[in-house]
Image (tube, rainbow, N blue to C red; front, side, top):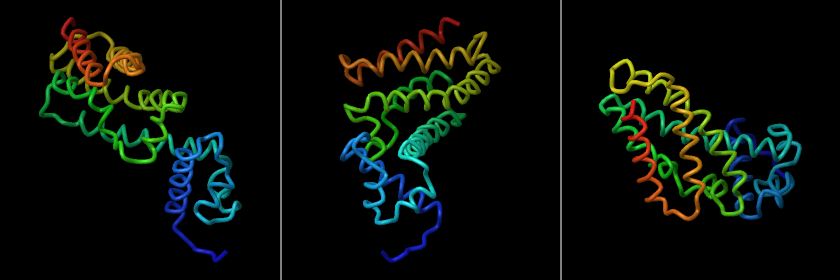
Length: 190
């Protein structure tokens, strides 16, 4: 095997991408570190230099996918031209904003990967709560809303949505409609 030197970040990303592709194709449980090294034609030693285990590769992939969602959400929250209520109306659409045509989306949203999907959603929510809390605090200062605890409201908002998104008996468009309606009702009561 001829040695090809690559930038460490490039190589690391290559390993993660190959692993995710194999997780989609073969399933997480049926993919080994050897499979990953064969996919990108590198030695096992090289792969282990970057990741100690398949689980560590999975965690890196999870973090990257969550980061995409956080970036989209953060961009939305930074829009100072929108009122809090306008932003709340756009939040459920975040579910569809993360690029759907990539291996990460396919893996985390495959029917047999509900545990991985739930782990991803919880990791994402934990990153989004402080961002929404900050926006709620700003809205409170501007007298758009009157709430006592912004962090608890942000937590309730996201974890409440999680239950709705987990429902398989409701179409996504309907879920978005209900989430918007309930979020507005919650904010308008205060």
